[in-house]
Image 1 (cartoon, rainbow, N blue to C red):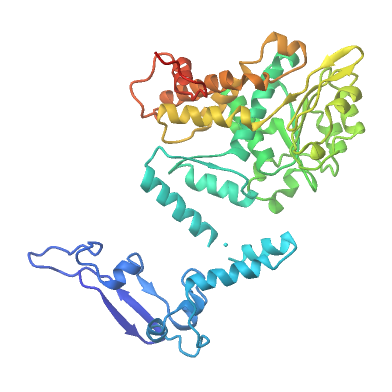
Image 2 (cartoon, rainbow, N blue to C red):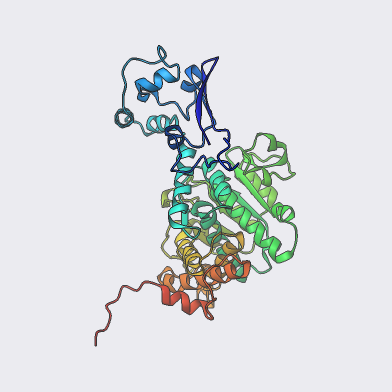
Length: 451
């Protein structure tokens, strides 16, 4: 193939990559390194390169003062840029110096947001990491903003082995607590109603996994099981009349109901079995809200999941005292045991550390190439299965964190089993005893015995 740069009217240069016939009637490979021209080596994927004003307005291709004298001549940039030529390295230093001059973090954030090759950079990384390490490389997303977290998970979930701990890890550990709490509450997940305070990535991620588990257990369509779950955001209860103004990840939770402006109004109207806080705002489970939960539940389930402790929706002591010791309580932050009316209550901690090590370990030992929602359900069920009667007697719905190695081995085994069942495991043959295999693969920081 022969590549030519044709000048056209209107100040645009077009890189001609049309096939050229070669001796023998074949078509020459434009990407062959032995025949690539300079243009092809620089931008082999480019069909046309804008020039003049169009190039300077294209944030993907504009290099600012880094355009060389030759490039400025070829792409009609004379008179559109200052005379100086500044290298990319110097541009980077100037930008970082400018950002570091800001004292207010918000100003730094705004300056960084104006850069936003953000998605291009992430795509370059995701492409490169897969090319270098193969299909089985595991990428964990952590602490991404809501609008980025959901889009990135949706984009790469079908092409890479990825999971988002804030969305999926949090969801899995909370679902485990709910499954375990059924031994105290009675009934199945489908028999209960859930109300969330907070509708960000954590809240909606948890809600979706609960709905999936209910659908799996009852064989009821997902659209129907979602109706057992309600969310409250900063504007009140998410209802159908608000649907047009909602972010896309909130829309599945916009059910038919009269608007409720406050959490207390929503609790009284919905009468949930479980109240789950993912708002990031402390003291929002007020005495009135908790007492309302206790008014129509023999054992209200209250999960104050926001971190750190100062941002917890309520404390363990408040939950137990305001419900006269009837609450089943778990939190995202650690709380000390609480004594009330002569009984000691041990609050559970819905910590992602219960899930993501075992989940990741299960993916690795099975050689999985994709993460499936059923694997998250498998992780939740494995964690819930580690709660014993002794734990229930203390009001606990999570096993002690001191047993994390044993817990992680069981989670890994359950996740790996699901990977084999779904046909996405590549490590063959499948080990006969996955729990023992997981334990044998674990790193143990002990000295070896020498003979």
